[in-house]
Image (cartoon, rainbow, N blue to C red):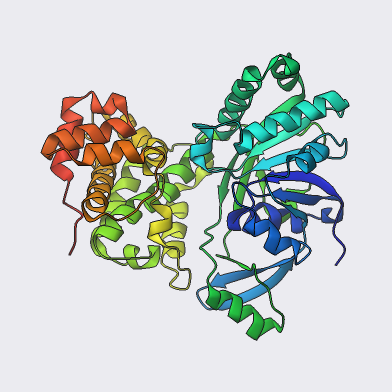
Length: 427
């Protein structure tokens, strides 16, 4: 299989990128013209493994009735993210038309000189210096308004660069479009058993297969000044206003995932399928969806059908979507998944009890983790550990503050969250 020419640069080489953007590009009718150079983040491991396979990998589509296998060849290069010379070279090439990002939510809030976004900005400086023309940046992270968030972060970094890059922010403002997206495809971590299955079923050794559910969704809004693949051939949808679709996904899918991640683990479950099969978890999810749905009013969203589809997807027993993976970076995720729904309910004079319960479950989860010495991932981990050392309502107040200062400033909201602690505990 001959690799297509590189016209897309991707930052954040991981399983989701391969099951989603790489898969959509593979299924575009003009895929032979659109190769991807995918760069890792902090570690080179994924790039080393994929490079040894010429960028090829097997997508295992795992449905309730069985697995199907497909070799995806849209990644023309798999590159160590530390290779900034290659990144700059590709971004300075006129043929490169767009950059896609899966860098996780936390990167948009905290970035250092070696962060993926800082590397992107230096690459855009190389493009400006080469006179290579306009380009699109496409954020594919679960961040509300991810196009605007990416634009603000990139411009902030550009403005902070030294005098040698003077005027870079202005150039970016004139030449770089920032495309907002809503992305959706459950992609659990690959296991040694998945690698063995590919070998047994397909007769070859793939050290980097990806497992995904059959469902895939991609909604995009924005301009592509240098062109793009025909992603619509694979089912991508292009809209003028992305926000309603973003909110549908962030609240109904991602919000339910967060609720299941915390409540499910407190109740002894390890996967989404196990947790949604627990009546207490399922009832909590349905109640949260009822609150969120009141603020998803665009007719084209099809919320009832979307909810039904989510229950079917969550219940797929053959997708081992681990709750521990979803639970990471709770302070960042809850700001986008629970806080908007709770705030909207409060603004309309309702209690928002179901959204408040999600925050309460997170507080119980991190409190239990700190008490037991169990490791967990969060950009505010040190603050969480300190707050978890407090007692009773003071702990609730301090931990809520890390999620939303505004909510923590309302004594009634804090009392409500505090009263909900323990309600989704162990059976």
